[in-house]
Image (tube, rainbow over all chains, first blue to last red; front, side, top):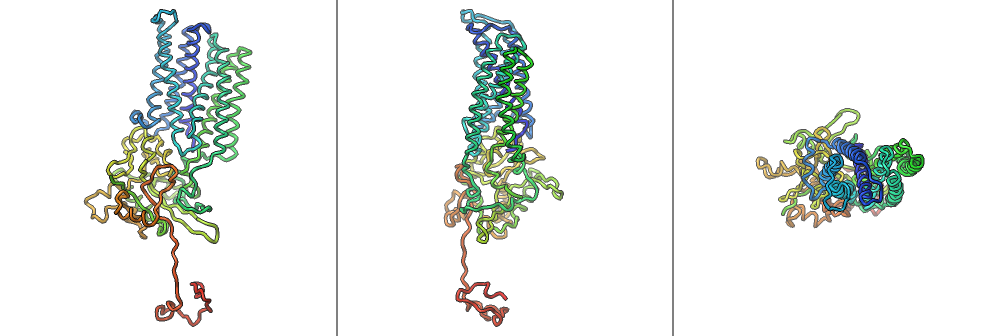
Length: 322
Length: 241
């Protein structure tokens, strides 16, 4: 497939935004039951704004993917069958919920509804709903790709797991830098989870690389044209120049560059941020932690490019030679 | 419930691209406006076509055969492009099974083309909407045309009659009989999309020529007096000078 930068930015930006929200809410939840020190509302407000900015950026990028963005509102209509529709509905919903979550922290309105002295109960309730919506959004985004069964590199539960874990890992790395910057007492908590999520996502992403390297394609040129002979070679694809089919379904990179992207993302997403997280946490340095996030995010751009480029569409069997 | 479809006989397709050009001509002058073309006479010509003829070589030299393989939308009975469409622009008609795109609803997200294993959909780069074979829905129901011409443009244009058109759910239709009697098959059956269009396979044909069919009375221009000596198994090559 030809990776579109709009979709690369969409999936990585909202993934990090969702992960950051998960970090914020888990921090608040732990504080509410006194497992972690309570934070000022300013920390949650800043965090919510950053999460929102990331998701708005992702949404803006997604519009660039559309041929007819002025009709984008129609895309919510087929939620019964299309994962893309489901994503189009749940993404604004998550953004709205994160906004409400931020506003509730900003309002200073802290009623004690349950009479158990827990701080900021409205935000806790909205946060719990948002957390659920965040996971639904991870699933909806990943299922857009995982539900196409003949794109065998994508049609796997690992796609959903990786989208969720990689998004959460980058979000928690960002939360670590944010907590250090805001002087919140959650740096160690977020840092530990960022390390854990990065390590777990390394395992699951490596698993999908392992799986994809061993795929046996169901479609062959024989099934594509129905000729039962072991030697079938395409001699002409019916056009002299290119077409939509030749542009959209091939990444266009050389084999060496394609392979090196895999190693670039494996280095940038996993070991480098882990070292920077460790260094930043030991030195309590905001800059190093921020660099950890930036490096991991850039790595994720390569990771997503590779994810799209690696998928081998069976239609290419019809477009092999000029 | 009918399911209109094309049946393409690979045994007689000669790869002349008449179906491609007639399809382009008919659909580019249709109500939906011209199909995109860029640099038609330049270095990198590109454009939108609903139908393309591709050529494959089967076998190892010298035992090879050339297969000319026309491919357009197969109007799958379980079309994977339809459920993924986020706007409902891509739909399958209940009454005749034709898969169509509503150009006024399409947002150009390309998801349907990803979901088509056959590469039958092409984005119109100028209009930024997805286009595909309509089975000439505007021809086949046009009552101002003589009844014999209410067929897709590609079927009308095919000089070798390699393309049949009809209802594959009607067991007595020309296409159903052809599929049944000549071993019609579907493309990529492994994905369960159940394409409505079928292909008729290449067939082995043999011709026996006996020596007495080549004597002067049947073949007045043949100068058999200068022919080479023939073997018992007479072949055409034996008559070459």
